[in-house]
Length: 305
Length: 265
Image 1 (cartoon, one colour):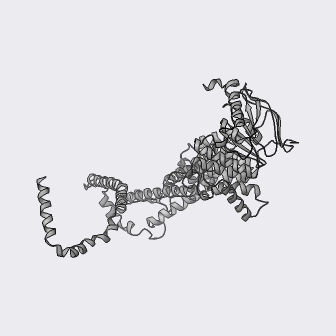
Image 2 (tube, helix red, strand yellow):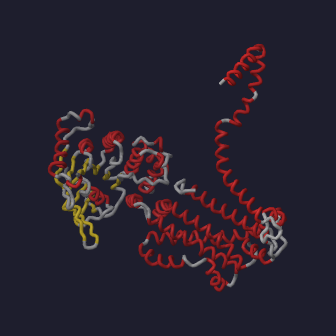
Image 3 (cartoon, helix red, strand yellow):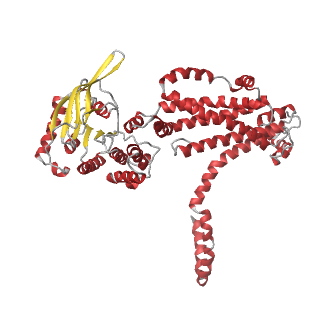
């Protein structure tokens, strides 16, 4: 109390001592004013929000890297430390799109090759999955006939299909695409069917009163009503596709991130493997976000991002 | 009143599940003249919604027939537009698109695109909802949703308008407001209306005749009451009107003296 009183008594005489210079001091005070928008209350809360969103994951990653660095820093350690990884793979990081012919391509090209296979297999799975799911969801007979078959087939691990598809297609490329297709299709079928079976009776009544024909019913009621479910299936599907492609490419060889990892292991380039894993994780995350964003755009906010 | 416009003839309805048969409606017959506003009132579970669904064609009668202008009703169609209790708007469409879906389907051949747009806007104006035409059902109140539901039904230009407890889920003030709006629209368009309700005041205020159903199972039409009140009706003036009070008393007596709903207590 006494301190603040003393401070206050110090300040007041100073101000009153030079009343003539009041306009000058007013000009000085005016300077921080343009700065205000930068640190305005709205900007401040936005920055706080951003910090609250990004700080915890950054902190976690930082701590994990630190732990890793500490554990693997000894020269005898079997795995390289993060700093070793970066110095070992700097050439790969800096030149993602080099091409020395054959399999000796940059990681950008390797990922591109894998993504191309996933895009094709996944697109086929999405179209066939939605069509089959709509059939199973709409028709009780289709449900009785097909559902047991689906339930058995979907439990077969993706890679178990590879030898069979190699035998059928006699080529690695279509076999890998088929593995993606057969991996991604089950969640799409099952979720689409559930979505269509769960269409509220109200919507069906509206369709009946309006006498919508089957095509109109499919496009105007069925698809939009089931869209949130369909996109759940599509999101699970894209995740599984990306899981399966790495494994499938390890076996079929050629250009692709999966074989790149296997190749790196065979030539003991452990740092390359770690870099590839980081890229695989990042691409998988981006793929999932893309499907989620499409879902929000298409379902107009009724699906969860 | 020469030939009935809408004729319900000896309709029975029973639902069977396995060996269990549950008779809901028993020998229901009703003639409705063109432009008449009929309320069907009864305790819950008396099958009044089932009756409405039979007229709509959404449910098939076990026995008996429904005629509309001497044609047998056996499937749903836009000539018998339904306003559903829970509005049943499609959540992925805007209010305008919800109404336009009906308009495009019913008048897709007979009207040009511009005419259909005008028609849709006109129906939205009729229920005073043109200001919210670009909003989605999730963004508007329950009363507004029901107004869009009414606009959609009216947009089909139905021969019979079927209202399934249209104001049941709304609060009392909104309900009053919507009832007045329905009376206004009815004065303008002179639709034939069949309305399900469990609100005695609503039935007396809006109807030309009130059909009172007995309790289920095997519900029948217990009594039909004429409401001899001149239109336009004003709810404030009616409060002390003798005919109004008498009609109200008759319905209440039917529901709470002669056909008390025992399970409700």
